[in-house]
Image (cartoon, rainbow, N blue to C red; front, side, top):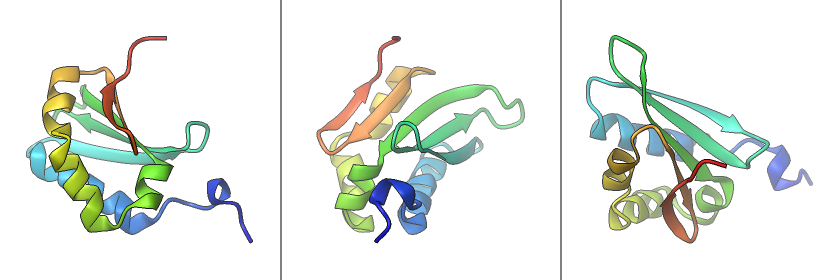
Length: 106
C-alpha cells in the first residue's frame, strides 16, 4: 500500500477548494500546486491582469483527507476563511483540522 504522503491529494477536493476561492475572488486568478514538503495543497490568488500575488493559502493534506467535499466547504465557511484570507493580505493562511490561522514570518 502506498503511504498517504506519497500519493496525490484527492483532485476532486483540490478542485472544490479552488472553485470556492475562484467564486470568492471573481476577476482574479487562482493557481494551485501540491507542496509535498509541507504536506499541503497550496493556492495562490493573483490579481487578474497583473499577476501580482494577492493571497496565499495552504490547506493541509490531513484536512482534505479527513473531510468529504461538502464538509470541506462547510468548514471553510464556518471558520470564515475568506475573511481571514482578506485580512492576511499576502501572508499565508494555513487551514488544518484545528482551524484557520494567518502564518507569521519565520
